[in-house]
Image (cartoon, rainbow, N blue to C red):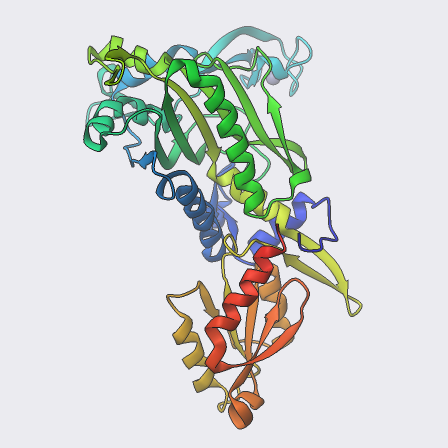
Amino acid sequence: MPNYNTNNTKLESLVSLAKRRGFIFQSSEIYGGLASTWDYGPIGVELKRNVKEQWWKSFVTNREDIVGIDASILMHPSVWEASGHLNNFSDPLVECKKCKKRFREDMIESNSCPECNGELGESRQFNLMFKTFMGPIENESSIVYMRPETAQAMFVNFDNVQTTTRKKIPFGIAQIGKSFRNEITPGNFTYRTREFEQMEMEYFCAPQNDEKWYKYWIEFSLNWFISRGIRKDKLRIRKHTNNEIPHYSKGSSDIEFKFPWGWGELETISNRTDYDLKAHSKKSGKDLTYFDQINNERFFPYVIEPAMGADRSTLAFLSDAYDEENHKKEKRTVLRFHPEIAPITVAVLPLSRNEKLIPMSKKIYESLLGKFNVEYDDSQSIGRRYRRQDEIGTPLCITIDFETIEKDNSITIRNRDNMEQIRISTDNLLKGINDQLESIKNSYI
Ligand SMILES: [Zn+2]
């Protein structure tokens, strides 16, 4: 582990750094913003892409048994009838008879409105799916829903995928994509939003092996976070209590992260049993059983689902990486990202804008483009530029100075975590960078 000085990051520090350095902006900010919607800026988009890319590698491309899909957000309304979302995916709400505001029944402590003290009406179910209309006519028959989870696309494509890939169980289908839930109480920055991105995988297995794979995917997911640099003591597994388990699930466990406001869910691993495949078979009339050639039998596979939030995970990486330390009587803020997660891997910084330094600096920058996520910056004093790179968590800074030009073609590589600089010849630049990245990666093991 890199040496951390900060254990409890404040949410205000994260939000302010995220805006200052271009990680996350409020959506539609010039119009006063739209509640609980956020935009990733130039640095944030790289961070989130790295999170998704690492997930895709671990859950799809580096494995023989899992394939991916990329399905539509809008699906046939029957999907949500069959899955149970139309009837069950709702929160009980009570409406204030006086001010007409609605509240989640389970969040209300007394019989009167928390805002105006007015009388509250009977509780009613409020479906969390976003509704819209498809085509030019707005009536009952043109209603479609924005998907509240990506999972259903894996179930309705089960036969297509299995037939085209000829996968034998156990195998999985994965997808990264946006989902929408009309949450009554969003909040905590990008943690709970109504539009969010999911990284979900449905793992189809023999019914008698469900417990084995359920445990396997909990362990695998936990290790995924740790191997990308999240501190072990900020992660925990929490088994769902009986009244939290969703209608489709036999058992669920969360992987939780210690956010600035407390423990919060990053991922839920659920045993969805054969609920979804059975329901879609029944509703659509299409046989979604699996044929086991060895035992010559047909059955509905069970499904283990690790469902991770891409935005929440990104926020967890950001929050965990945040550190402050005193350096030369000044406060240094540094994001200690794992090199695979860091938005920028290498920054190329000429010591100054002196014209002698620029051509060589540009040449080095261009030689690294395409090999790493690399940034060139000659805008301010070198101290300020180091500080900026520390604040966006860039593991390595390469500095070109007069020794480079006038003496021996050597450059310095500065390590983000300990600020040590080594001098190497530009002939060994690639090896030098890779060695330094390796040593930072190794510090997480
Ligand atoms: Zn009221």
